[in-house]
Image 1 (spheres, one colour):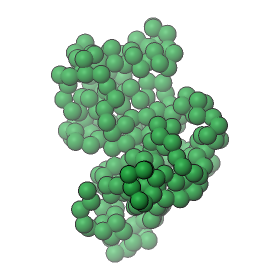
Image 2 (cartoon, one colour):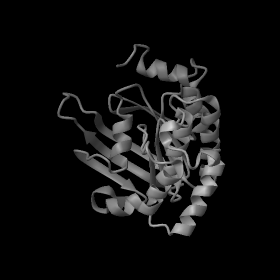
Image 3 (tube, rainbow, N blue to C red):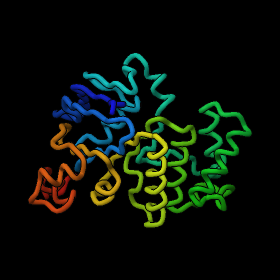
Image 4 (cartoon, rainbow, N blue to C red):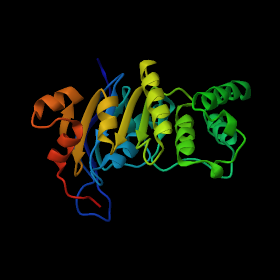
Length: 248
């Protein structure tokens, strides 16, 4: 099993803070994993995902994705990754089809092939009856499903997801999780952040728990439970390692 993402001594500090948001972080993600990057609010999860995707710069350290050094080959990296941000990357005044057509054209697909892809995914995610409806009329679950489609239209080798099921109905969450499992079986490596410990425990093949920008635990869910035998599930491990106080 070879690593597809390698992070070494990664540092990010925002001008408005005194501490590093990401503090000399080392991570290794194996090709074919569903990798859970977990941590409390302010732990550095979204910052780390954003740096991996090239959305924000980092101060020092190294990011290597699929053999490409990110400093030198960001253009090549962007061709093989899909990004599903926590904030919805959709245009409310456009229809579902128009949104996906817009993103599909960015990937350079021809009109006929793109139309087939859009039809396939809208049906897969039970949105075909909403194809010509404007996104502003959609429920939160519908928007989350459409947001995911926009990130996978081009069949990425690596998919980065930041809280993909936050605040949605159970049915939408189930559709998303089941498709992520299917996508992973097809060979896509998935890097995923979440506050939902039960979901992460059931979905992820490997997990890293970070806090204050540093990794504090890593391993398979089974290995983490074995190393913390006073805990019965991942949520208890998470609270044990990060504390029970509320984070802002």
